Length: 208
Image (cartoon, one colour):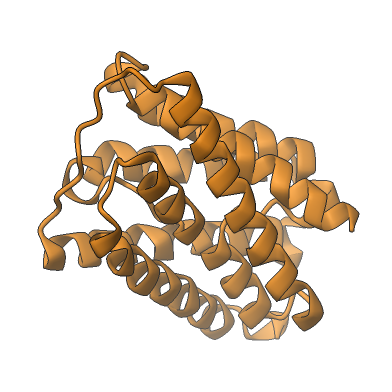
C-alpha cells in the first residue's frame, strides 16, 4: 500500500502545480519550469518507495520493460487517476474565479507531439531509473522532470504539453481541456510509453 500512497501523493502535487501555475495569473511563461520542478521533487521524494511514476504511461512503459509487477499496474494507475481528479477539484476550489483558456489543439499535430514527448519521457525514465548502467544515480529525478519541462516549453502551444493520461483527465476536470479531446492524450501517451519500452529493450538487450 505504501507504493500506491506514494504514487497518489506525487501525482496529486504534480497535477495541483499544473493547475495552479496555468490557470489565472499563475506562473505565466515560467509555468513549464514550475511543472517540471514539481515532478522532479516528487520523484526524489517518492521514487525510492514506488519508483516515482506519477503517470499511467510511465507505469505502462516500466511494466513492459519488466520492472513493475503486473499486480501493481492497475493500483498504480487507479491511484494516479484518483489523485489527478482530487487535485483538479482542489484547483477549481482555489482558482474558482480565475479565467480559463480552453485548449483546442489541432488533432493530428497534438497526437504527434504528445506521442513524441511521451516517448522521450518514458525513454528517459527507463534509462535513468531502471537501467543497470545508471543504477544508484542521483540525477534521475532531475532528468525526468526536465524532460517534461522541455516538452512543455517546446510543444505546449501545440497540445498543451500533457504527456500523461492522468494529467489529461485532471485538466479535463479543471475545464482546461474539453472531455471530447481526452482521447488524443490517452491514445498518444499510452502509445508513446509502449514504443519507448520497445526501444529501450531493443537498445539494451542485456537488460531483458
